Structures are given as C-alpha cells and as structure tokens.
Length: 305
Image 1 (cartoon, one colour):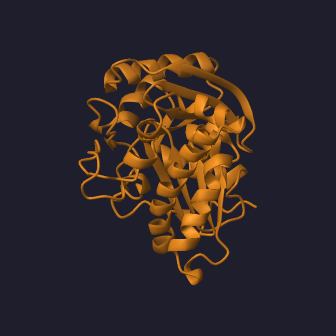
Image 2 (image 1 turned 120 degrees about the vertical axis):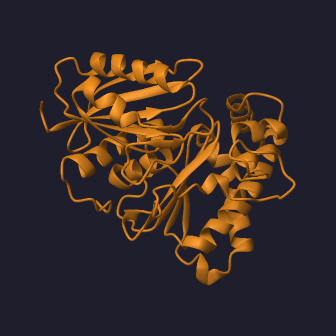
C-alpha cells in the first residue's frame, strides 16, 4: 500500500461520490455510483467495497475517509445515526469495511467533511472560525473554531441544520419540529414553489419576478437561522454549499440583509456570508483530508492558507 494516496467518499441518500487523491489534495481518479435503495447499512457496505476496488484496484491508497449524513462516535468508527437513511443506528461501518478493504477507515459527518475540504482548498482557506451549511435534501453542516472542527465531547456536535426556528413547524426526522432543515431544504423550497429548484434557478436567471421573489423569501428564512448561528459562534465566514447553493446569487442578498437586521454589529463584525467554492467535491476532499490527518499523522490544524 502507498501512504501517499488516500480515498475520500461522500455518502448521500441517492448517490455516493468517491475519489482518490494524493496528499496535496490533487484528484487522481473519481467515481460516482447510485446509493442502494433502500440504503440499509449492509447494502451500502457492499456497494462501497465494490466501488473502492474499482476506483483503486492496485491498492495505491492505504486509507479511506467516509462522510455520512449524521454524527459519528468520538473514535470516528461508528455511525451513531443517519436520520435520512433507513436502519442506520450505531453502525460500526469502519469495523465492517477494514477487513474487507485491507485499508484503514475513518468516518465523519458529511457537513464536517465539506467544511474541512473548503478549509483546505476552498472558501474557508486561511480562516480559523467558520460555519458551513449544506443545503440539499436535508440541511447539514459543520463548525470550525480556532482552526479545528468542533464536534463536542461525544463527537455528535455540530448539527446546525437541526436548530429550532418554529416550535409548531413541520416535523423533522430528527424528532425536532420546525428545525432550520424544514425551512431551508429542497422540500422546504418546494413548499414555497411547486416545481424543481433547478428550474426555479433558471427562471430567476432570466429575471422572472415570481422566481426572484421565491428565492428572496427562502433567503430571509435562511437568514433567521444563520443569525442564531452567528450569535453563537461569531464566525469569520458562513459558507453555503449543497445543491441549492447553485442559486446562491438569488438568495444571498436576502440572507445578508436578514443577518444585518437581526445581529448586533459587534457580533457580525468582519463577517462574510459566501457560497462554497468546491461545489459537490468538497465532501470527498474533506473526507480524504480527515483520513490523512487521523490515519497518516499529518498536523490536524485546518488552517492551510
């Protein structure tokens, strides 16, 4: 096995994105497969094994990092819960995979992976305090404080998409009601506009006033949730990623205006609210970086620029 290469994986509810990187973050090979349906742990485990062997048949990479939609245990080996995947409760995925792959494995929350990727080579480069939200099927994210991921004493922090906005709002798979996820996910956007988000983006690009109004309304609500996160963490940057961030140009002005209205000046001093730079590649890049840090002994600081 070659310690100079690493595999990063972004496991989602509908698709699994894999890539093989060198230790500088250069992508050497990539692959995407459909997530097995239903996405139960055993089926996903076997799909990962097959995809990794196809991606790296010569075993050039000795370590694997995997981002999943939910919290891990403190040792980064057990998926504690993945609320949008069936049957994922205390799944020892690293223990399952390592003997099959003959590679070392580490796990992380997918939002944390995206944040690590952006801190390494993207929009959070050079920052020490960052909040990232991924806006898609759900709303995930991560928090970096003093150049390191904030994951809490059991490894389950932070889940910024699950903070509460409305006590009487729609139920969330987490057990919460009215969470930020219920107002900023794709399903939430569809409650504002009956159609595909990509189509809504195209209409807004063409200047359609109704589409622009929908994105502005979406941005205002998102700004309410971000305001709470800014008060809590006073970050240098809030980054927005995930599929809906492709339309960030249409809703970011409303987000910024809402935060400026709701957050006192001292708490948002120097704050930038930006779209991520790495797109859908941030998660697998960050998973690879975490595998390097944890399994190959690289300095764990995320400040790289």
